[in-house]
Length: 258
Ligand SMILES: C[S@@+](CC[C@H](N)C(=O)[O-])C[C@H]1O[C@@H](n2cnc3c(N)ncnc32)[C@H](O)[C@@H]1O
Image (cartoon, rainbow, N blue to C red; front, side):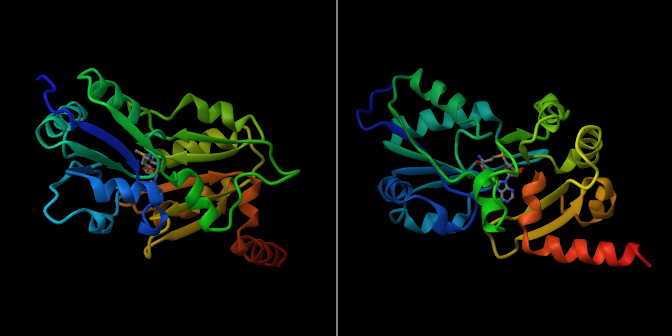
C-alpha cells in the first residue's frame, strides 16, 4: 500500500479515564476535524458526539481475553483509512503512551510515510486516584510513585511489583485484578502488614466503586472485584488519605479491643 493521499495523517488522542469532560480541548478539536475515528473499549463512546456528522467511527475495542481486532489489524486499518479518507483520529483510553501501545502504532504508520501527531490524555493512573482524593505523593510519606502493569504480555505478574514493593513508592497497578492474590502475596513479603491499598473500578464514571483494605486482609475483598470492569490497585500509605480509611481504622480498632 502506497500513500498517495497528501491529506493522510493519524492523530493519537488520549481520551482520558472515562468522564468525557476529562479529555483535553486539543483532543476535542482533533475529533471535530477527523475524517475517520478508530476507538477502543475504554473510550467513552459519548465523546464521539464531537465528530462531524457522517464521520465513520470504527470500534476496535479490546478487553481482556476478548480481542475484537488483533493489534496488527488495527495498525493496518489506521494506514488504510488514512490513505483512503485523510485525517484519522485514533482514540485511546487514558494516555496513548501509558500501556496503550501507542508507540507501536506510530512506528507502523510512519513506516508508510504518513505523518502522525500525539495529543496526550489524562491517564487513569493519575486521574482515578486523584478523583478519590488519594494523592500519589505526599511530603514526608513517599518520594515517588510507580505505574506498573499487573499482567505482562505472557499473563504473569510483572517483576517490577517485587522491586516496587521494596521501595517507599506508591504503587499504581494497572491490569492487575486477575492477578490480584498473587500481587498481594508478593507485596506482603516486603511491605508492613497494615499497608493500605485501594481498588478503584470504573474511575470517573457514574458506576465508579472503591474498596479499601490493608494488605494483610486482602482476602476480605476478593469477592468484591468485578472482573468485567477496568480497575486499578493503589498501594501505599497515601491511601490512608482517603476519607473512608480513618473511619474503617477506628472500627477495626474498636472491634479488636472487645
Ligand atoms: C491497557 S491499559 C490502558 C491504560 C490507559 N492508556 C491509561 O493511560 O489509563 C487498561 C487498564 O487501565 C486501567 N484503567 C483504565 N481506565 C480506567 C478507569 N476508568 N478506572 C479504573 N481503571 C482504569 C485498568 O487497570 C485497565 O485494565
